[in-house]
Image (cartoon, rainbow, N blue to C red):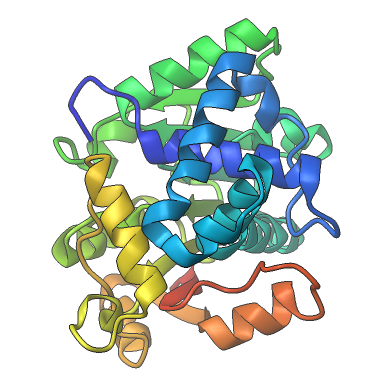
Amino acid sequence: MEKNQASLTALLTAFVRAYHYQHDSPQIFEDPLARSLFTAEEYAAIGQNLADSLQFFDPGRAASCRNQAEALAWVIQTTMNTTLSRSRYAEDALEAALETGVDQYVILGAGMDTFAFRRPEIVERLQVLEIDHPATQAAKRERIARAGWEQPAQLHFLPVDLAAADLATAVRGSAYDPRKLTFFSWLGVTLYLPRPAVWDTLRAMAAIAPAGSTVVFDYLDTDAFAPGRTSLNMLRVQEIVRRVGEPMQAGLDPSTLAADLSVLGWSLRENLDPAAIEDRYFRGRSDQHHASEHLHYARAVRE
């Protein structure tokens, strides 16, 4: 992303959540607030652009679509549904972690996440820190103000460019308390980082969190970047994000993830592959929502 520009993928993620809440049933993830982050003009423009993108994703399908609404539904359900299941995974894991004594929630790369306004019954039990690029966070706060939402006392914004500052330095002097059991949510970020940066960030989390803290993140496997092994749909998605200036960069090896995390101070507790994600979140659906090929969800605990 550009230095002073809000993340476009963060806006797309919020749009998908809003669309899903309004149009799909049953709900994979419920976000009744996401729509309020957009003006009517913005929402319509993003919907039109996504519908038009079907011509790139699937020209044959585009030719058979009767209208924009049909094209938009197809694009979201076949290429952008991972934002729904990964958010559900993270928040389900957070609720379980509350029973272990977690009382601090750090959302790395928070984007347009609405958790702090959407789940007051959980927020009252936590301190919530949203860490994101300054431009993206500023854009979000402008949208929150425009929507008229009242910021909870437990919510703390921390604008940080983690490409230029390490996590330990970033949280120093903030509301973050290194003595508290912490739950880190790191969604939709590792895909856009070189592998060493992924390890560095996980190492930094371990350095500032006490034993028993949890991290949840999603990642692409290495096949997503291997010629001849990458699914056609993944190639299309990679091209779309490249065109908006946020290219995907590297994947992780699911077979070595436990060992890789152990070196960094984390014990891998769950590592869901696409088949397991399909079974947990998409089984029995009658629409086109399915797990994304090559995308995995991981949960680890600080040793």
